[in-house]
Length: 113
Length: 113
Image (cartoon, rainbow over all chains, first blue to last red; front, side, top):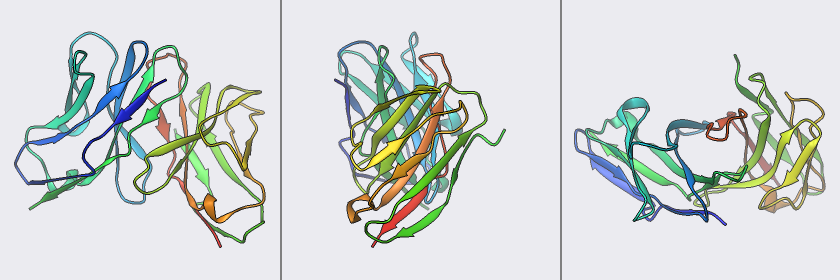
């Protein structure tokens, strides 16, 4: 079985401040981990993924995420948030032996000017 | 490439009516998925397909049916619509390599009254 937890429903930050969105996961085997972003009334857009190798993964729009196997976490980060980063963010996990992706409940990020 | 396209964008059904949500991808992807998104619940997998002629149930398949006669198309059928099926429906696809990310369509917002 596989599952994802996003412990924060909402994250609020000021523009220019660092942004962190938390994610922890559970899988029986080795994971693939993903972050997606959803803007209002749109589909999900892929941000970045962890496959193997370097624990720090860089993705689109200046986002990065750090894979921590011992803490089973994959937190999303951005050094300096923009108002345009305000959106709904989803973490997802897939066991390498599975076809299916499991999503967290999502975290709403609001960046105030 | 158009990517993943879905029709219709919006639909209102009466209880007991039926309809088909259309999904097409032009990326020659083997894997296709149907999700529903309810507020605060993340995305739940309804059905998925690993190739033409092969489909399987996800987490919440009751009240839905799918078919996959071609690589490109993966329609979702709602029989006897119920208010509990009011949701936003997303179709997604991904390529063959196991680490590939999923690409999402723009969604169909369905209301059952």
